[in-house]
Length: 299
Image (cartoon, rainbow, N blue to C red; front, side, top):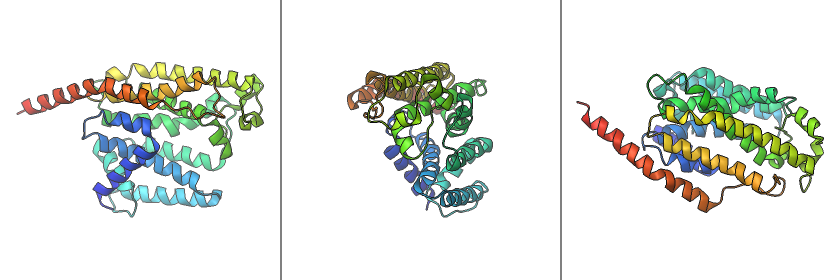
């Protein structure tokens, strides 16, 4: 697997499995896109390993093998893997924190055995690795403004949490089919929802109330993430604003169907997706041209 082919594999993973985010990445300068795809591709690749085997032991062995190949790739060794050459190159190029990578793999390993979370704090512990660190790993590629590197980390974390919680609300039925519940059990108890209610053909009033409550939490995370956009290089802002609106649009759709996520998979209509992209395209092009002019002026 050549480095070019590895980056292309990551791009295809992003395009196939993360359509909203992939659309937003098209607003980035061309040189940033492969690195964002590499980070997304690695996360998706690991997630597919966790979900692709029926036996816990098989999944554990596959994850162990991935971790071993990753360690070798990060050490600079050639590895027989479709995704890791690109991911390792991006990690090295941007000095991405290996602690974030370890936290991500811990959450992937938790999915092998943990199927319920008692409290929202417990769920946040899982999402720290599955979502928040994805935001902080993306951050160096998105280029925080000078002096904003540390301040931008928390908004990046919050955006990852917002995206993840949005996915959990959209995928309640799909996750239950895999034997997992990503809604805190204490919240189910609080609203009088039984786990069996998540598998019904239609949501009960109590389940709708529960999902509305969790959607409010997602909105809080989105709100805390928003200030981080202005901390990024201008050429990265249209991408993140578009991703913010696209994922927020999924939450809008969940609310619009009365939280009926059991019969309806919430998707942003194609026309709205195109409108969001078009609205940010002019700003993206202008920022890219401005940065190119600055580069050209440097002796």
